[in-house]
Length: 371
Image 1 (cartoon, rainbow, N blue to C red):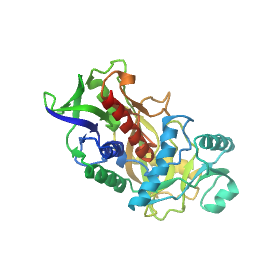
Image 2: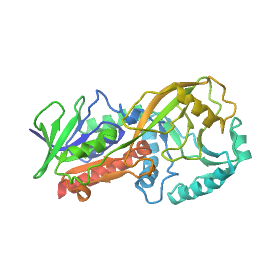
Image 3: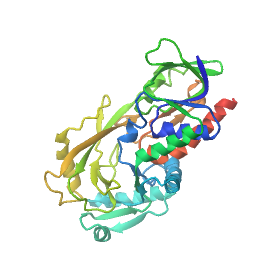
């Protein structure tokens, strides 16, 4: 077996960011990625939004890492010339009940440290975005958009410049905790081929399933994922909005919202569809519900303007009974497997939080190495 100090499983945005943080701290790092390139899972199937940190419960990991990560992400993009834009967003109310809900959302945002949230009347919001129809809105000027692939390439470049190595088309099949190390078996092999002092399980939608294949982990801790699929539809023609437009949030997601790419093209989604296994097919028939949801705040959306775009899957630790659970970033104190750090339920706002999560993981790895 080959010995290495740190192994990161998964080369999505969280795995690459963690590898970067570890390598820049002087650690020896190998990244195992089952796909032939970085970011081919959830990291490339999302809205590419830089979130402000508005919705999450106070003192949650999502709130903490989103607010910290957002500031660091803007600074990193500006320093590196990574395409991004601080375009802002409106969270809109289309019913009287939702108007009341906006106050609670604004208060939660302020508790989380989002100090620039602004309450608008319907008239103010519609004056700023004439195509909009609403009774009131919250304005989040610190929300933005990013070229997530360019961002991941910069993270990878930093990691490799500090000695990290990436093994593509290499899936971690199982692990076994040994004295002072974790032995890793690669898919297709019968015996462990790699031994690491610390392993970071950042396998995205596969991370929870991997906990069932760690010999030495408390069996009562092993987790299962619940999959919330989200489909996106693109808009033909020019977008009538200059900001992102979000309806009031719904269980499991943030509603069918309008996001923009850096070229100004609009797409809508994601919706929420609970599925038994990951699936990336976009059913054109789902457009029917999209039209109804979008016309609640943009009544002039014309028939036939939406086309299926792509789908993503959120790997959640809880189902419809607890759809808005927190991140789970857990080391040996939680599960008993020395040298193993599991990153589970890392969904939105994972992209925004990635630099903050990475530094937290690097500190956890240091504690494991010093133990």
